[in-house]
Length: 217
Image (tube, rainbow, N blue to C red):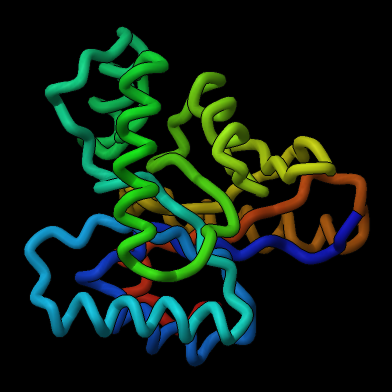
């Protein structure tokens, strides 16, 4: 089992890629980048710069993963009770939560179409927004040929199966819990270097978290 953590940078889009690029340039790690493909009302110049940046990251050895379509949920879709609860817990960010197979397939298709417009090659994998997926979504991703799929506590790789993983993220947490999570992360990383049988840690950043401590990683 690898003895190094996985580094994930979530929620990268056409609006924040320039700021994130500066952070990645100063980082010593190769990140899995979770890309939101929806361009919204971005100008052609900004969209072109976004495409060029994605290609540059790919050439630098970063892995580009498809991260939903808009990330923000479309409230016109019908959802299960679980999906409605997930939307409440995430402030409407759990885009795929509680969707049936038909709507999941439709939304995934829109995400893939938007990705193709980015001209970034094939995505390395798929991670549903806020990690709220489903068995149906997982099956659809395998049917589309994704080599990797990430959920909250598992990482799946085609040919290797699923691997239990512990994510460390402070996204959406109240301030008083941030230091506790960061402390637990440091302790777990030390333990993991010694006891390699432990679930592999994932260090997860979101754009909003880098404002206060951009040089942490």
